[in-house]
Image: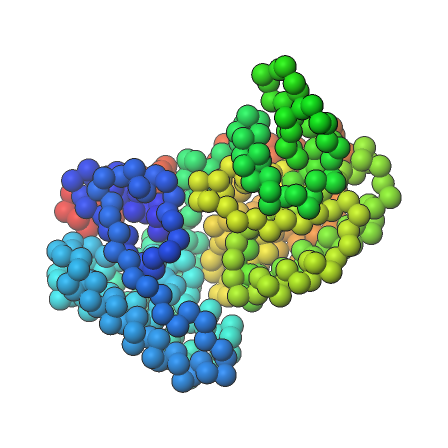
Length: 422
């Protein structure tokens, strides 16, 4: 949604754009540089509700959110011409935003990233009354939108065939600041975040007289930054640590890979650094599993990154792993698009519409099991960094990737210009 706000703000400097959402997380730096973007934020309440108390407390949480949204949209926001709502979440946003738009004479536009009821069904089951109620809300109020966008062709077809909602496909695309990271920037970055990787230092040999990071080296008396000859292969995975991303698949694959490669020379197979970013409800459970692993040549680092550093870390990686499976089977993982923007090929777990993004053997590989992922990691990284024909082939297909501004101009800008009377 941040990229939508940026694109709208750049469409007309006189257009005032407000980002409405929970306070706490910082936005991408470009947002703060735009004088015509401001923020309408509120405190999240009752963030974690146990399953036993969900039926009792969820309605209270919804009522609190409903009041917060009503107050901001009706009184704090001032005059409004259009509200662009990202879905999910569906409840209570659909009802509140639709009603406020009608009261203020504003256009109501939905950006469908997934089906909200399908996420609720992960924890409650498809037949639960709350899931059925959420489905009804999503269908009925989705039809009331003045315009709809969705992130896949499969979702567009589903929305029309099942709910008679007409949507325009607006694929997620990486913004321009997702790009390969030059060596000098890698050097500066990993000097700053090196403390988070201290347990991985045994992957390389350190020279006391050189200025070094785990990826780069600046020999004493020289200006140029060099890639280390013993540089580990970097695998990156960004996860939400939720039920629709089984992180155990990656841990099982790494366990298999470690068993196969522990006694190989560095020339045959590199040491591997797996960087994991993100936060979510299952993180502590998986961190405990990670602590129990005893890999010889593989290290896992869960990193906390500033928003400005995340693209640079992605752009320093050799390979991405995506474990997103989609609760609905209709959406695509944004994290893969970010990796593609950085020129990083991906191994991704397969699901219904993934082929709209990952073409097996062209820009990535698709797997279904941890054993398949282990095979792919071994095939891609053997011979690293000198001779990796498969990895090089996949990366070469990402030298020209469409970014967000081009996508917006072609698919979204005309619709918004019409709605705003341009």
